[in-house]
Amino acid sequence: MSRIFAILLAVITLCSVCTDAVSAVTLNGGDANMDGGVNSLDASAILRYDAGLISFGDIELIVGDLNMDGLVNNLDAAYVLKYDAGLITDLPLIEITEVSEGGNESEDSLSTEDGHGESEEIDVSDEGNESQEGADSSLPFDEEEEGVFKTSNYSGEYISLRVYGNRLDISGVLEYEAIDAVWIRVFNAESNTLVAHSYIDVQAHEAFFESIDLGTDTARKYLCIYHHKTGDVLSWSYIDKNRCYLSYGDDGYYLEQSPVLEHNKQTLEEYIDPQDGFCPLLSREMYGISDRLVDSDSGDYEKMHDLYKWVSENVYYDYDFYMGVTDSTNLSPEDVYLNKYSTCQGYANLLCALLQAQGIPCVVTDCYGAFPVDESALDATTPNHVIVEAYLEAEDRWVIMDPTWSSGNSYQNGVFTQGYNLSRYFDITVEELSICHKLIRRASPWFWYL
Image (tube, rainbow, N blue to C red):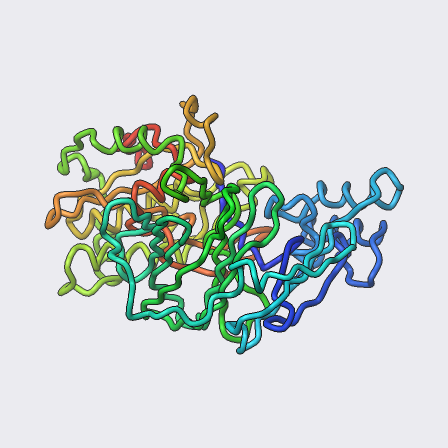
């Protein structure tokens, strides 16, 4: 199965950045060898990287990904060669930004790049679009009230959004230990220009709150939220472009819903007998492994999260199989546990087996994944991704989780590379699920022992 994944998007802007709040380096898109030019030498470097002959650092990966598909490969090399031959004349300017410790101070102007190397200064001091200074975190909204969008039911990792009138309220908790800030940015969807932003200090496991003025215009907008880790040059995407749009209606702005939300709600209403959440051929080995990975005194919900985190942190996505370099991968729970790499099916199979070994009913669910799904997904009937549902008896509900998309690990050319591993997709809400998943079939048949 293919993996539709979220790009760890560094704050690469063809739009705006706060000039005093950040230090920035502007690079030519395609300059993979970082010599200041874009030519056949860069195409050669990209092809050598794609073949596994050389390695790229974070910045080279960003600069080399010209088509922004999350990969650096022959397609990007072709783009560079077309530019070198004069077949295309423009390349994006990529601005790598590092937010300073004082980045949450208000600024009077924003610098923008339009993609052709020309910049302009935009005065926002009188337009209500200034960086928000230190919102009062003692005044959060009720995250359970009707109309609030929440990414997850898990209290240790989530973001909630509430829109009322021309204001956007944002609250949440992030679990990554080294996190020190969150950067919130709102863009005009038509012009891709920045209209509001806020950079706030955040600590792991502590709640944060911010309120953003969306302005007095009625233009459609989209929201981006990045998190920054202490010591990193880059900020990483948490909610990126195309995931969260705001439109203007009679009562002000509102969050747009996914076109597959109602379909997914109806699908999740289908009854699954928890007794069907056990594979009769689960091996003794899985019982022993599962017992070593959890605290026997923990409740079922804590065990779900602990096993979910273990799988997302210790299994690596098999890009060799995904890219067709190899013709098989690990699928059985035992093989995935032993070899530590697979695709989404293997992630799901292992997590399901570990949960079942704790007496927790669990099923693998087929879905169609896209980033994000659009109206064309309404007609999708062929799955390209799988997720996991585990039954929480104490609350009589199925907990939805996607261990693959929470795992930033990769296995490529025989090399294990560890990435960011969060609880981003643990116990996700149906609203969050529907942004990138259309459910096809719940409780898919067990097959790994057949």
